[in-house]
Length: 163
Image (cartoon, rainbow, N blue to C red):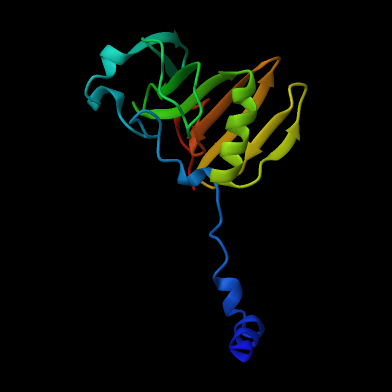
């Protein structure tokens, strides 16, 4: 048995059994909505969400009712969806949390997506790097905002970036 372990380690087979790389690219969505989902084609969207802000490239929607669903097991205070005007699909989801739930969501995100990187900033900003999805967290006093976005969306031109 010891020789088999030696062979596995020497040949690198043991390293192949390591945990897969974690990143926000595994983001499965929030409250049944995924990035690039079309709200206009989502049943019940108009009943559950209200327009809060419109700019040149996007429309933002907030949940109409209190008690929005938890994310990764952590209670969320509020949520805003960002929908591209031109592409008509969800390009970002922002979650607002407060108090001890900020620490809880940071730990949950680290467990789900790997260790965060501190990117500095006045409000202690963290990020979880991904290739398709970008995720960050910004502390604002006792509150925090978790932003999850489609990395390919160009928020100035309102189009997907060319690969």
